[in-house]
Amino acid sequence: MKFAHTGILTCLILCLLSGCGSDLPPIAPLTGTVTMGGKPYVNGSLMFTPTNGGRPSLAATDENGKFEAMYNLNASGALIGPHTVTFEPGGKVEEDEFKPYAPPAQNFKLTPREVTVEAGGTEVAFTLKQS
Image (cartoon, rainbow, N blue to C red):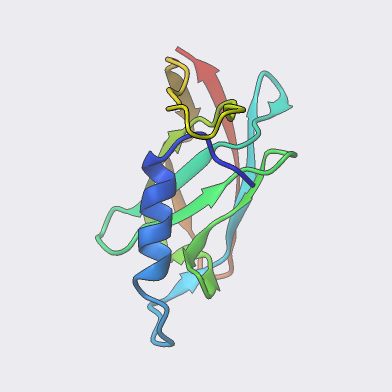
């Protein structure tokens, strides 16, 4: 999957590469969907930042708007507890990969902006609106 934006993607790569040990804090599955206007939002990025501190988990939406949060390269999920959610839209990948890409100037309102990851796992349906 190609991404047209680099902010959250870069953070994802750094976070996933920086802690692949077996000593994991308490994490649980975090999955769901992102829709806009009732349709799946493709190629969006989500960052789940624990409000009590700790490493964020990251996710990208697929062609059906579905995502699965990743804590690191070897562990899917997110820290158990409350998180704030950041969204970054995807965009069209330029045909000429050497040409700089500027993501579209769009402002999105993501609902909900906060989620709590439960020990047994959590599924969230996010909706986007352009603001």
